[in-house]
Length: 262
Image (cartoon, rainbow, N blue to C red; front, side, top):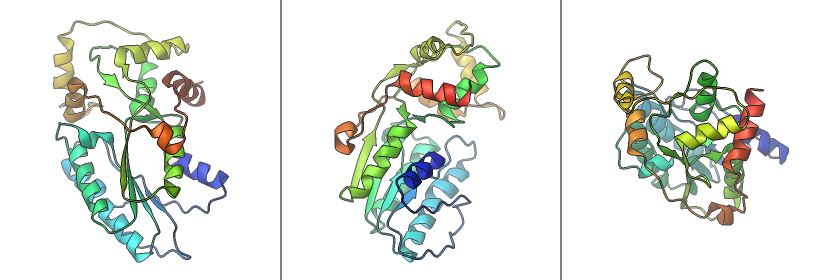
C-alpha cells in the first residue's frame, strides 16, 4: 500500500520521504526542514509468534511517535484496523488497540483510520493471496463468511483528505459492500479469471480449524477463528466526510486482476 501512497503524493507534487525498515528499533533519522505529515502504515498481520505483534505494532508505533516528536512533525496519521472493534482478542486486534492508545496519548495532532480489508493491485496478502493460490488449486467455499473490502485507491484518497481535517478524530472505514465469500468467488469467475470451485461437506470446516495449527498453514488459528465469527462492522459515512466516491467491488477487483494476473 505504501507504494500506492507515495506514487499518489508525488503526482500531487508533495515532497515525500519514505521509510522502509525495522520499526521495532528506534528510528534514528533527523529530517530537515520541518515535516508536515507523518503517515504510519507499517504493521504485521498474520504472524504466529505473538511477540512479533508487540514488537512491530506496539513498540514500532512508540518509536514512530518518538521520531515525530524529535522532528516536530505537524500531523500524525495512523492506519489502524477495523479489527480493534472485534469481540475477539486475537494478537493483531489487541496490538492495534494498544497502538491506538499510544497515538491518542502522544500529544501529537493525530487522525486514526480503521479500514476493513484493503485490496487492489500489488496486493500479496488477503485477496491477492487468494487469487494466487486459485491458479494452482481449486477453491472451496466452506466458510461462507462475509467481507467488507475497500479498494486501495479509496484509502489513499481518504489519507490525503486527512491532511486538511481537524485532528483528534478516529474514523471507521469499511467497504461500500458486504460480500459473502461464495459471492466473492462468483464475482472473480464472472471476470473470466479461470479457477475451479469445489463444494465440500460442511464437516471439512473442522479440518480447516485443525490445519490452521500446523506451522506451514497459510492461515493462523486466530485468522480462522475470525472467519468463523463472521463479524461485520459499522463504518462512518466516509464518502461524504472525505468527498471520495466509493469503488464498487467488481470494479476494484477487475483492476486488481488485470493489473496483477493478466
